[in-house]
Amino acid sequence: MNRKHSLQFLMFLIIATMLIVGSPGAAAQSQNVEGFWAGALDAGTFKLRLVMKFSRTPDGKLKGSLDSLDQGANDIPMSAVTFQNGALHVEMKSIGAT
Image (cartoon, rainbow, N blue to C red):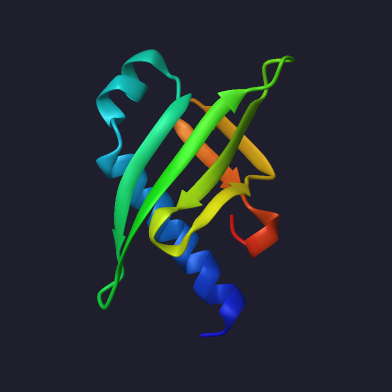
């Protein structure tokens, strides 16, 4: 698996893990993902603590970033964030992930 596909798979696992571990009950009730979502990505030989941060721009659009606490990577920007009908879509062009 090349680096791009590894990162895409990692992002898929991150988002899936965080949506399960985060606080899905509260999000489902309010249809809102704003705030901090924390979880751990268990990739077999290592475990990474991650935080996804979501807020709104002044015009009401969602924006977000990702922190990988164990790697010291903070505020990795999300280039696109949408949440419609209970489905979250995140793009992070800087690491080639959707």
